[in-house]
Amino acid sequence: MIKQLFFGLFLFTLCTRVSAQKNNIEYGFQSGVNLSSAYGDNVGKEQNGIIAGLHIGGHIKVNVTNHFGVKAILAYHQTGSTWGALLFENSTATGLVAGELHNKLNYLNLPVLAEYSTGKKVKFNVNAGVFAGYLLKYTMVIKTEEPGISAQRTSPGNRKAINFGVSAGTGIQIPIATTIKLDIGLQDNLGLSNTYKQGNGTAKINSFTVMAGLTFALQ
Image (cartoon, rainbow, N blue to C red; front, top):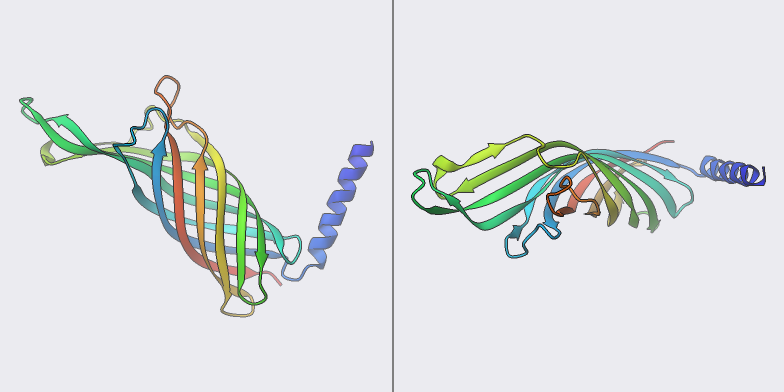
C-alpha cells in the first residue's frame, strides 16, 4: 500500500510539473545519414568497413522541467557493414576474383531518451537512453570486379528480428518561429544484441547518425 501511495504521489507530482510547464510537449520530424559498422567475434577488423544508410522518422518530447525531458524517436534506420578484401570464385570456376560483401539491415527503431538542455533562445542538449529495433529487411549484396557473379539476397536468413542497445547523442535547437525550432543533432546507437541467430557467431551493429529536422511546440 505504501509503495502504491508513493508511486501515485510521484505520478501526481510529475503531471503537475508538466501541466505547469509552458510548451511542455514538443514533436517533430527529422532525417539524416547513418554511418554503420559491425563488431563481434564473427567480424574481422581487417575486413569490416562502414556502410552509409538513411535515417528518417519522427519524435515526441515531454519537458518535465525547463532543462529536463523524456524523448522518444520512431525512425526507419538503414544500417549494416561492408566486408572488403574478399575473394570469390569467378564465373568459370577457374580462379578467384576480388570483391566486397555488403550486409544491409533496415530496422524500425525506437530509442527512449532522457534529455538535458541548456540555453535561452538557442539550446544545446545531450541525451542518453536505450533503443529497440525490429528488422524490416535484410539484404546481402556481393559486388566483385566481375559483374557477372554479383548477387543479392533479401531474405532475413540467419538474422534475428529484434535488436536492442544503448543510445547517446547531442544537438542544438535554433528557433525559427514562435513554436518552430530547427534541430541539428548527432546520435550513436550501440547495439548490444547479437544480430545473428544461434550458431552463427557474434555480430553487433554500431550506427552513428547525423540528422536535421524541425520541432514544433504545443501551446
